[in-house]
Image (cartoon, rainbow, N blue to C red; front, side, top):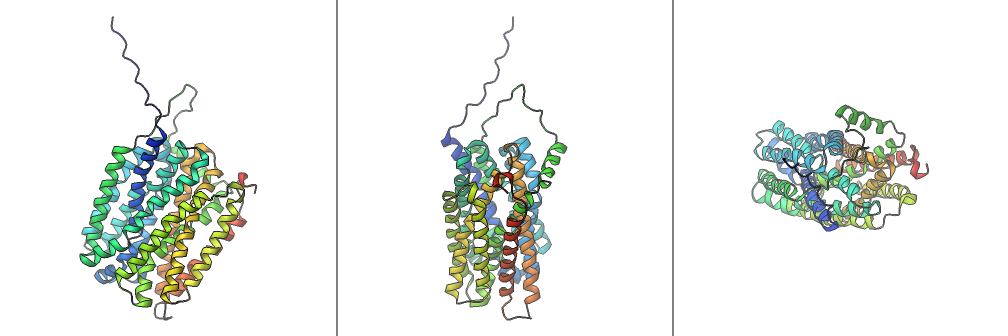
Length: 417
């Protein structure tokens, strides 16, 4: 008589230390995503020389990554909810590696834009997998602190595109910069492939049937029908976009044009801003005031950031402008509280899709703001002495409008609104 084969044993629950190492591995992908989204600040001048780009074309180059990144968030959220964090990031991230290689070899501006789109799609799940992993495998009370830590680690990508990238570009070329980033992205993918193994969720007899893609898409769209989603979307579309417009696009050109700084000098400022921005999420993750006060903090921080951008519009002495940029970098850490706000505004089973809606708003906002500020700079060129003043003023105005929308639109039930 043949003995039945033993049932496969479920993987034992992962220890807290193992979960933290998996999160660090996932964060390596987010680090490269952050690097890719901030290359334009250091590459703007050489790209304008090589391809004769206008400020508007430069905005298109910088915005393409973010548009592709944001447009894919719905699909990434559905994929994470249906197939898991590991499968999603391992399947998609190779597109970023290929896009970086294509950027390094691009014969013209059109190919460069296509490459940015590929990188954007490849990086689309990079931070989303981190936040969903935290939400699924750690206590809710640790969400803000761990998200802040993950965001801070991801900010290391901004360090790569500060002085180090400026040095590579100045010593070799912007193409070499993309080659280095492609190699680092490959290493990150290998680390995630080797190090991330999601704790298995045991199936039960009364578990609901697995959703189809169509059902998942309908549930994703249903989030947009909830009144409180639109205040979250309005604020999410502008706060991070403002930081990336400064750090990822206009910082280098502005310092070079206003104060005749070299590329490496502006790269040093970008590096300093990135170091300060690394501390911001850790700080705000630790001092999260909790659901009762969190939304007031978000509004106050948004208006404070608007004031800093308004001051940058005035063309101040270089030391003061650098101080304002560093203040913006530190204050940007409050964005981690927006993730905690989203986590508290929706039921646990919709965490992946809710985070995806928010992330989609963030990066479509980044793409739109990159394009919009490029248009503002192009229109201001030749009409005013300093086209960067109108750009900074436009960002400040949008922050004020986003803060008012966040405060006036319907609030989540948990917020007492």
